[in-house]
Length: 144
Image (cartoon, rainbow, N blue to C red; front, side):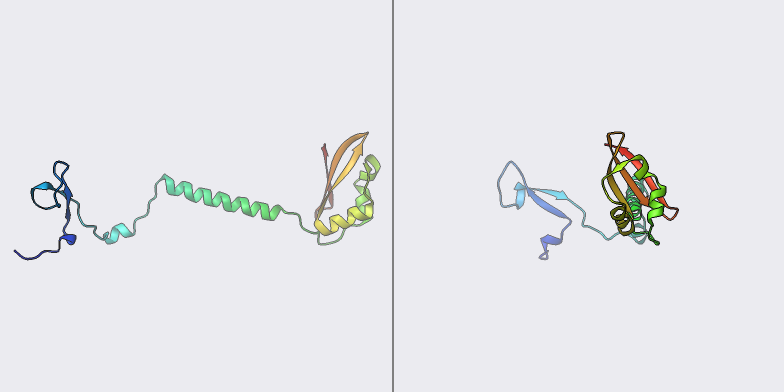
């Protein structure tokens, strides 16, 4: 009998629980495990089109859209600077008691594109959010 390299055989010797031998002879039980084979050409090109892949793609697309929405919705400085007349046309200095001067409000709008003011309306504290858009200034009132 030829000398065979036992590490390349498709089975291995597992010592039996009844006797503690060296792994040879009658104290050894053999277990067959096939050697790993390379996949066929068609198996390499197949993709998992199951529900898990579709959900994974949907999660990635949703995450991308959310990041895009957050980046686009950030306020930016306007193309043209706003004037005092446009600020006075909003009526915030007529109907509200605003602590900030019109010049500081305009400077903030022209630099950041928006400003949030602390104001009073009939002795009730409110927040005034002024957005500078291409159409003009937009005022949003939020109670504190």
